[in-house]
Length: 202
Image (tube, rainbow, N blue to C red; front, side):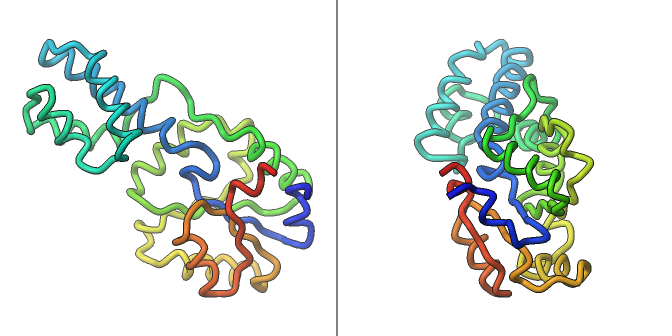
């Protein structure tokens, strides 16, 4: 079925960012690249082996204790954990983040059909804002309303409900597009229709 059939009777569509609109790894791997370059500059340790190690560790086990593993492998002082964390929040990326092609086309269709687009994103607000600022939106940015869950101190379900209330809509007039069980559970709490972002590609 054409992805747009999911929203033909909807007024608004709510998205998460990571692994929904673009691959989270596209951001993280650039952060790791910048950190390795920083270590090369400050400690005269070759950046390339550090980059390769961090990429492999991330692809095998995700972000868990990634700095500690890297520090142990390359004898990097723990004082640089602060720089590592800070880069996640304010890194100036070498390359802009690119939307999944089909997701870009889907969102463009939403705009043409005058449907409202919301982004409700969890994780560190500064980091998520940094991602938003460094994404190539292809003109879509003017149609986006973004909510940062941690900044508001509300659950996703509460933010979803507030969006419905402020637009005088019922749950069946909206759709949530997510990528994990948590997003699905939060949607179900207020009876919001939900689809996994991968379904957009079929």
